[in-house]
Length: 440
Image (cartoon, rainbow, N blue to C red; front, side):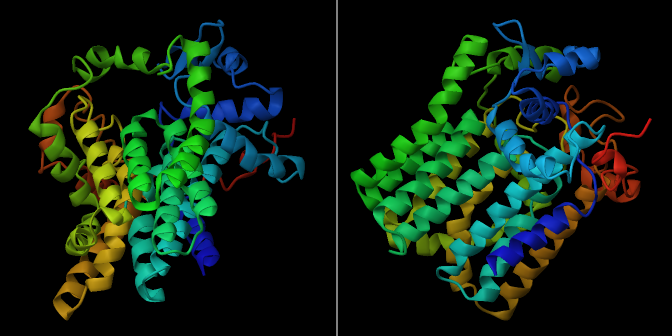
């Protein structure tokens, strides 16, 4: 059933037939193609072919004089791995004009679909088939995983599947379904993928490893830590070699805040960021995906089980990331559809959601949960087929510089997307230019 669910999600994610690209995601997809074509992650050839890319902040000149992506190389490596068999069997010519976009969309949707399958398997440990499907549907189709994470190589897609793998391992260990070594492998590899793709997830990774030590013993936690480090450390080394710091090009991007985002510094404790992540009309998680409120029903069971439960540690990890993103001066995540940064937290809410579904009873509670799920799925679908056609981020003024628009209920992103209608870019990947070089 998990396989069928994953395939169904993969089909849904690709139903719009396009990559929803952003400035930040572009170097990753080109790096994936360069890795296959030329065996390198550098982007000199790409920039040489399209010099205008050199002006984009995500294309950075590294210490070795080569253009490189400002972001983690892990998603590019995964995209190259996913695409390699398609290339070698002749199903896809990666030199085709739209091949990089297809590589990005296929890889992102595949990874997020896998995350949805893992969530289903985790839920199925304790829930009935129907309730496990409800949890997986809310996770995969009722959140920004559909219109955002599954549509291009943001780094979120890799982080999300990594966290989902770790959460599945934690739950399986807790219930005795996995032995020490197998459970440690799932958790360690998952946290390694998450941390290596998005260093911002370091607080969550640390919290979960501590929680593993408390709930499953220090030997299990040590094995997971070694596996996590095996994946993360090479990325840190590459960052230092290329950019002179283990943080990679992060400091370069942070220095652009005043120019690009009309903000100074990187972090500031402000109620606006924390409130905005939850209830901003155009960035709030509870506005776009109220289905996550179901997790509140699981808090009682979580407190009853205490710190031996993975749910408590996952919730603490989610809180640590919420504090990080809420205090970030660009908490709204730039030009995007809905709450982009909160996507990283979603896998960490799964154990609480599972607990909630074990106790959810009564017609009223079921009706409210169904309504929340319906709204969440509809909002996600709207973004998948319309964004960025609604042009909310840029008109009538750039949201990165006019932050008051984040609180404008009269012109919110959901309403604008509904009025704008489907994007003209839909189905552009269902063409020959995506898989073949045009004939002369």
